[in-house]
Image: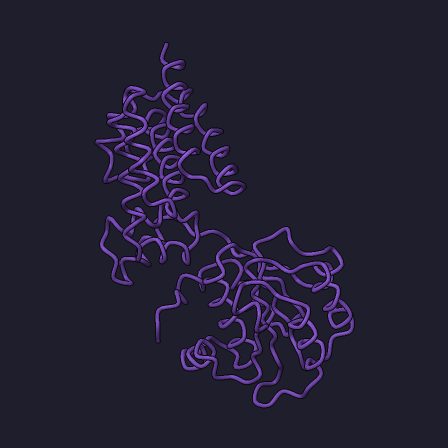
Length: 325
């Protein structure tokens, strides 16, 4: 079976809570699975269905679920295609929810809309959630904050915790990534195994890390900014990763200054972090964090990586100069 991180998911509080519902036969008619890590939620849902239907996690059952082999496990078509549920998806669910299951004891409707569900879509689902058929169960994936109170109050919410960097790193190595790629990917993935896998498979993220570190180590004066910014935005689709790595480096500098090398996340970069800690003190790093947040917000709103990078890099040198005086 393709590695879907079942051992990692099995160790979570979220899975323990769902397994307990299965063992105590107190299954709810509707669940909200909350996490930004939709890849992990897919595995969590499959393991939950296996437990609910067969009493335990069965690899054959999981493979059939992952391969789409159960007619009684239904997914919203538009959400699967473009990450956003539409009213037709909701109508399909409400129209078929009362049909008798074919193979399983229960029909499962999985709504994995990474880009959210609009209020009309949620309101369309509401009556079915209020008066659910006994033979159907609903699982809604959400990163959090996008569901109406009328919907969330009719579901049991299970929050999947973020994974520690060390566990993600180990999963990536077991999946074939080299140690450095695994570490850098895990460190910037914010506890998200799905994101970490994407990062590890794309060499552009490693280049974004190298750009961030090279900028901090090499650029000392304003005339050096424009060439550095040009190199950074050449891969503008990775500008967000560049910002993430800057933040991670600043956090490691502060950790090193306060607690020593043992507190570093980027342990292979300890020499570079030591060098940077002589130029960036804790006060400087703290002052720089809002600049990164502002750059992310501007990128989200305007998308002009070139002008945002120019402003950010000049601002970093300015803040650094002021704080060291």
